[in-house]
Image (cartoon, rainbow, N blue to C red; front, side, top):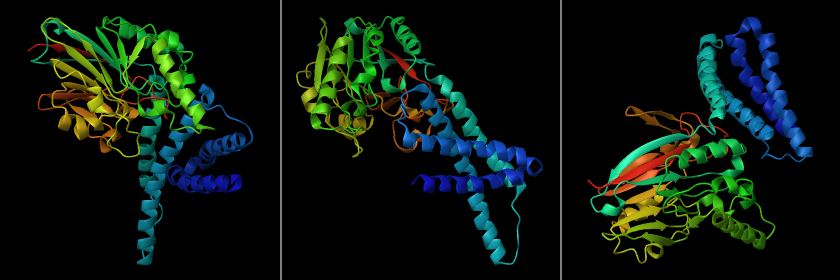
Length: 394
């Protein structure tokens, strides 16, 4: 297996290197040394990982794997150009017209491949570059006692990917300086294991809000993406996660609700477990159960991790839910956002609602872009988000 993998990588890189020899024929030796040094690096890491245990949670390995992944993503772009050109050359050769590899096309391919390579490398610096996003929503049925209610939403902490405790503390300070009335956390506290949070409990415990911090579970919180020796270990991990929410003073809502009362009307905070319209994700959310006892409330705010829940069930079955707060997508941690002009991410090809505010009739959905990262340890264009939503009477 080791030799097969190494051989495939060498063949792949040798093919991609043709673009560099065509684009830079006068400096092919120096270019070759630089190019194939990354090939040697990948093979060395693969062999090392086969014989020694690698802790992928450590920053050195996380960033090394990120660099290798980004590099090969860019190489695949060049590979696509070369393959398309070679198909064209084969057709031309079949018709009796021999065509040499184009230096211009190779330079274009390298230039296009360099764009994601440079941007994704620079994006490694954005893990703790939190961006505050403010918006105001007017609700006709909002009780006067809650007029001006300030809600902060964070989502997708993915604590196993956050190693800089000072960086996390900066984000918590940004939350507290807003003096919020409510803080909502909409799922995915961890990547896989509750233990990822142990060194961070004291930091997130510092989040304060007038009416409290309310949280729900996301798909990663169930421990479904890691191998367990037995079901007892998985259940123990799940129980430890509940204990961590409690230790931070967060009110974990598992298909249940909490009601804030006032003289002129009540406000319900409803939280469901993970529910997804996409079949490969766990769906344990029970909206009818979570909503019980809230029918007389003037305003209903729903916390549901996966935004596909909104159109698939919330709008259809619960027209009295005013705002749904979701996360999950991270905006794929890659995209372009120019306020009022452009909002794009590959995430839109997967999720109809993937970042920001959406409205249908009198119901709203807000999709938070995430506090942490998963997989790629960085962000390009889609920065980690702290949402500040103010509720007002018209």
